[in-house]
Length: 145
Image 1 (cartoon, helix red, strand yellow):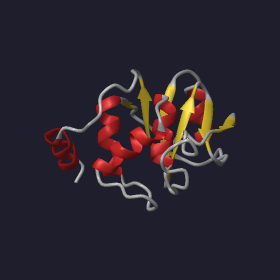
Image 2 (cartoon, rainbow, N blue to C red):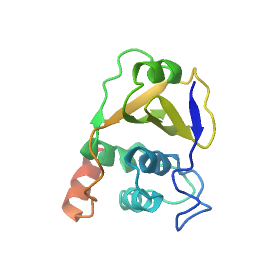
Image 3 (cartoon, rainbow, N blue to C red):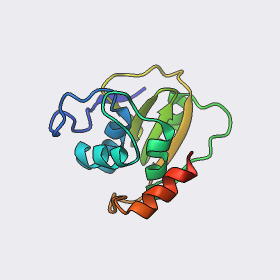
Image 4 (spheres, helix red, strand yellow):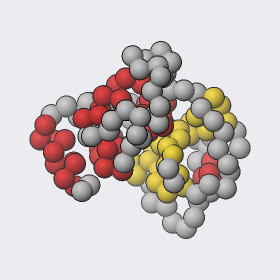
């Protein structure tokens, strides 16, 4: 599997010692934005530093700004990488989020090729709009509870 070390801008952020930030890191990588932008967006939906992210804390952002891919059958990271070698993808395997950019995995550690993909989104447009409006946030959070 092609892999590249990428911390998503964590070391340059306001929070260089953040742990368990794979969701925020993968978002920063696929949208090519500063880590802090997504840290704040996911925090609005309930994420707290150091404990990771639950689906309800990042699925609303992705569903609003990216295209969820239907996953038929079991995709390993290796097979997903081969089939999606062009474009930008936010990929979730059990317990971890990873960015796939033009056929190369971007993360802080290399993952096993046999891990199974559980969710994936294709990024089709640049990040332009934060989710700061309270009604939008409340509606999206209620949808995932």
